[in-house]
Length: 335
Ligand SMILES: Cc1cc2nc3c(=O)[nH]c(=O)nc-3n(C[C@H](O)[C@H](O)[C@H](O)COP(=O)(O)OP(=O)(O)OC[C@H]3O[C@@H](n4cnc5c(N)ncnc54)[C@H](O)[C@@H]3O)c2cc1C
Image 1 (cartoon, rainbow, N blue to C red):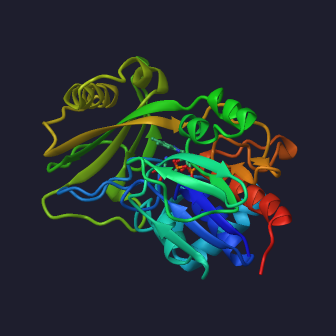
Image 2 (cartoon, helix red, strand yellow):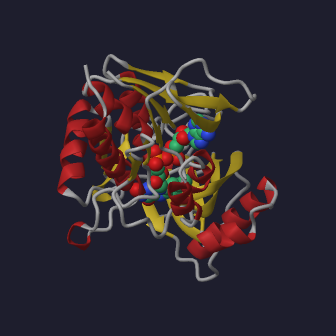
């Protein structure tokens, strides 16, 4: 049995952990946040929950479509009726999928939240050790490490392998300013999700969160909306104040829909510094067998270029994690 550290409890990290634990390895997942999910995220508020990260996802490869069917049967994901049958969402919230994956990890895998890994260090013969943000070394030794975090953050962690680190350093993620807003009065607007008809290049995508499958309605809240700014506008306004972003995005929403909007009863903004990867690497994942060090996540294609398919972020995260788990299993010693 090998001891494996997985860094990051998004879809990629939880998938690689589940596969390796099922193959008989002892796996510890380290997550810096309070819970799993990463960019499949849900923000709780007094106005109700907002899916403020990935609004949904699709399955373009046969392998992921098969996996999604299992998740649908389990009730962890469902079709987003408002966006079309092929668009999938976590139920009852986007972070539910990761929460379910985490609570169904096979025996042999465990999740440590609120544990920020700052660096990984290799020393023969004991293997890998993790240095935490407070400078302390984690007590455990590991035979192998899988890094499952956004490319820019992976680059620093992968420093022991210069070529893996460089592959992540040159992979770019676009930022995304996101506004979560709720109104108490009903106003006429298209339901569901849509790409904003905004010629000014501010607003990218919009979805009405409370109208989606399995979402809760709160007394006094007529509707909850999530507004995503375009990558370019987000990049140009990285240092903006949340109030400025809320004002800009809600004004563009009102103008592009031709409606008058009263001030929202709740509004918050979040800047995703690394939201989506426009050009993922062509390889399924990264793996250095001699160092026993790997990388997966949406920076990687996951399936390789299968018949020119272009899986999106959530699907690439899952595909690349599965590819990495299979590569790792070939060179690790199970029970
Ligand atoms: C606004 C927005 C819109 C999106 N739209 C779509 C869409 O329409 N369709 C689609 O398919 N995808 C979309 N995505 C992308 C999708 O969410 C991601 O591609 C996918 O969730 C990536 O999963 P992951 O496991 O690779 O990484 P993540 O979900 O980022 O998980 C990485 C985890 O690692 C943790 N972590 C990071 N560094 C450390 C560290 N040093 N130590 C410990 N833990 C660490 C993080 O806290 C996080 O939980 C969107 C994302 C955003 C933000």
